[in-house]
Image (cartoon, rainbow, N blue to C red; front, side, top):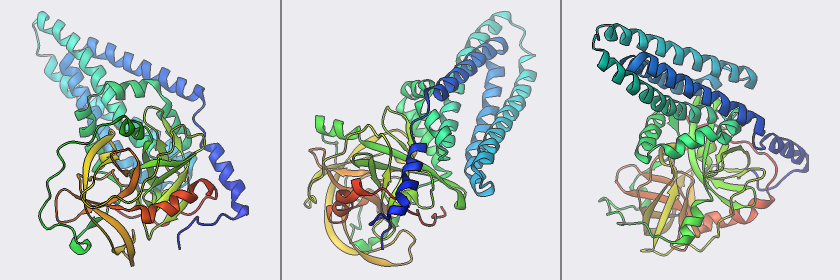
Length: 421
């Protein structure tokens, strides 16, 4: 049976206590972080000018190697260190050692090359380029590492990072293709458990053509403001997890159960409004649906519609690879009730699902299928294992009962076992 369909009174106080912990970071925390980040960027500006481009490139390559190592190691710390306080300390220590160690090694190699430069004119150009490249590279490294730290699900760290003006500004100035590439790099060590389903669902054998363009409307633009990114760390599996979700009621977000499976402290990021810690109040591994409670959530609930008919156009909204928000066109190929595995592939049960002509990727799980009017018509949960451009979403037959009860769910429930990716 799904967890969270009834709320025991004895759990209500625990849920409220947790939600109080999940309040947005105190302004002091984010201001201190912004001051430190500002000083770091200024420091690298000066560093790049003093040492020049070659030295800076060497340092950057070293820091980048250290950052990649950190992205790989940080999720594993949770499985090695269960106590939150020590986990934070270990994360910061590992991050410092890898970044500084990488910089020192890269700078040493570059310094040997730079000593051979005799032309003073080249040295002046080298200094200016070094300053620019150092700041840009440092900003990108901060962006990549901060997402990995935020995904640990530690409320203090996650909300401070999500509220940082400096990090928000870096994100706003980073070109979308660069953010996508960084997200795909992180996705190599991030799991969202996105199911790959074979033709048992009656999907097309040949890859369908994708709709040429997503419908454009003010309603769809408004709906996008209520589509959130969800991250967390499944400590038992030693992995970060990332997916999408949407606001379905006041302070309530719907996503897939496999996105938060094994996660004790998920983090919800509202577009342009930073990150907030959440608690799981509904978890159904059979129909792959979950509800998160987020205290003080500012995004508006989305309107619901009926199940779309075959041939209907729509939109899938989400955060592929845990990167920037993407809204893509979709078309309903079929609607059917068929036996589908639960998230652990241990049992099957009937589920009403759409087969979609859509570009569904890791990180899109839990995002809404929207009608052209910007209303929720389903929840994306899988892609085809064998056919390109085919995705799957549950219909309103599965979603509506959960959405209607979401606001009344307050008791924290188990997120089950993680799915080792």
